[in-house]
Amino acid sequence: MAAVLELIAGSYEQITFGYRVKTGENDWTAKPDFTHHAHTASVSAVAASERFVVTGSKDETIQLYDMKKRTEHGALLHHEGTISCLEFYGTSHLLSGGEDGLLCVWSTKKWECMTTIKAHKGHVTSLSVHPSGKLALTVGTDKTLRTWNLINGRSAFIKNIKQNAHIVRWSPDGDRYVVVVNDKIDIYKLETASVTGTIANPKRISSVKFLNNSFLAVAGDDETVRFCDVEKAKWVCEFKAHETRVKAVDSLMVDDYCVLLTASNDGYIKMWKIHLKELEPPVLLGEVNTTARLTCLAVWRPVQPISDGPSKAATSEELTQELTKKKRVREITEKVIVEDESKPKKKKKKNGGKKTVKQ
Ligand SMILES: *[C@@H]1O[C@H](CO)[C@@H](O)[C@H](O)[C@H]1NC(C)=O
Ligand SMILES: *[C@@H]1O[C@H](CO)[C@@H](O)[C@H](O)[C@H]1NC(C)=O
Image 1 (cartoon, rainbow, N blue to C red):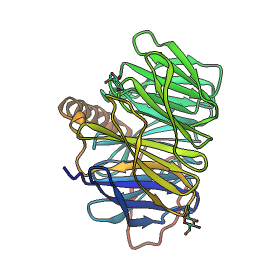
Image 2: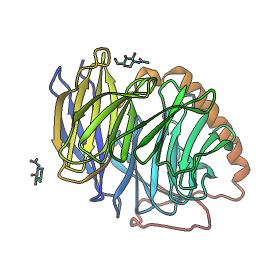
Image 3: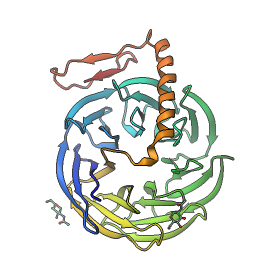
Image 4: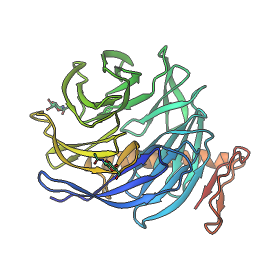
C-alpha cells in the first residue's frame, strides 16, 4: 500500500525543506515539494501534525506552515531566545520550550498560547508529552528533570539529576522514559521514577527515537546509528548511516515494518527499512541530497497512525476544556493581538509579556 508522507528537515541555512516521498516495496524516492524560508537564523526544531508543520529557530520565532493550503500561516512570537523543542499533542495542542526557560501550551485552533509555564531556571532543552496527554517531562540547564501536570499546568515532580540533560523522551507505551546527558542515556521507570539502566554512546548524542517500546534508535556526533534495547540497557545493532555526524532521527511504521529516517550534516536524508521482528541490519530504501547542513527532522502524514486514536482524542479534549477554563481567568491580563497578513513580516518582541499571533 502506498503511504502518503513527506519528510521535513530544518537547516543551519534558515531553510526548511519538504520532500514528497513515493513509497515502493524496497525503493523509496523523495522529490522536492516545498522550501520554507521564514526564519532569519538557523532552524533548531521541527514538528508536524496532520495539518501543520511548525519550525523553531534561533531567531526566537515559531513559524507555521499549513500543509493543506500549502502556505505560510504566520508566526508565534512569545519566546525570547532560541526555540529548543516543539512537540504536537494530537492535533489540538502544540508544546514549545525555549532558552527563556518557558514551556508554552498552544491551541492549534486559533494558535493561542493557553498556558505559559516558567519551567526551568535556565533553558528548557527538551520536552516530551506522555502518550496520555496528561503529563509532560522537561529537562533544562538547571540540572533538573521536571514533570508537569498538563491538566492544571502545575509542577508535579522535580528530580535533581546533577547534570544538564539535553534530551528527554517517553516510550510509546508511556511506562518508561529516557534522559540523555552528553553521551549517556539513563533509562527510567515511570512507576518508581528511578533509573533502571544506563548506557553510554561513544559520542555525544544528538537525537533519539523509540522504534517500539523496547528499542531506541540513537544518533550522535559520528556517522553511526545504534539501536539500544532499553529493557536490558544493551546495544543490539549498529550501522554506518552517513559520511559525517547524524543530527536527527525519526521513524514511522509502514505496514509490518519500521522506517527509520536519518538526517545528517552531510546534507542527506536517508530512509531505512527495519524489520523489528527479525532485527537484521537496516536496508537503505532511498536518500536525498538537500545540499544544506541539516539540524532537525520530522515526518508529516496527512492521517496519523491508528495508535494516536480514540483514547488520546478523549484526553486531548479534556485538556482543551481544562486549559480553556484556565484561559478565561487569564484573559484579563493577556490579550491576543492578531496582525493583518498584509503587513510586512517583522519580528515583534517583548509585548509586555503578551502573546502575539500573526495569521
Ligand atoms: C521491539 O522490537 C524488538 C526487535 O524485534 C522485539 O524483540 C521486541 O519484542 C519489540 N518490543 C515490543 C515492545 O514490541
Ligand atoms: C550534494 O549536493 C551538493 C550541492 O549540489 C554537492 O556539492 C555535493 O557534492 C552533493 N553530495 C554528494 C555526495 O554528491
